[in-house]
Length: 140
Image 1 (cartoon, one colour):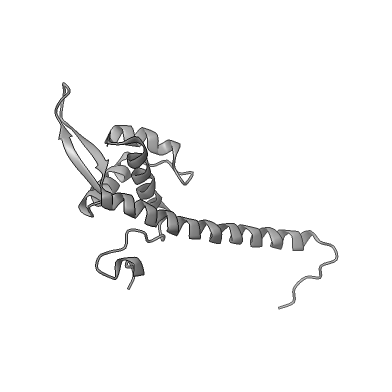
Image 2 (tube, rainbow, N blue to C red):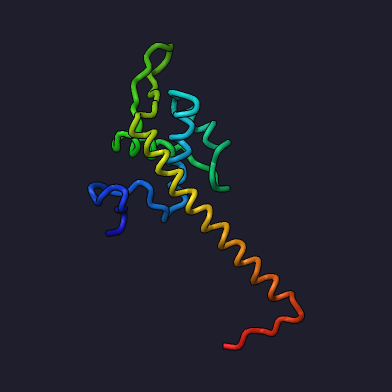
């Protein structure tokens, strides 16, 4: 079934599906929250760009949608901070479940990294075959 994985026994939608590179916002948010501790969305947005796993700019809407999804799934908690002047702001923190989920992401990403490395090496071998004068062209 699409969107589910063996790690979650089909009980809920899989949050580690790698079909969309934009999903890489999720592990980075969890990483930042674990490493730096609780943070406001604005702080996360600024830090996120320094750890982005793709070249694309992460818009704030995607960050807040990710935070909401992580909160719904129990990986992140949020509270209202009213201690400062001005409007109340959400402050986000990682849960124990979120810490475990970050480790799941690390396993998935390590496998993906190995697959990507292998793929890149294979493409480079194609390039070297094309420039090798001793190599005869493939016949279909």
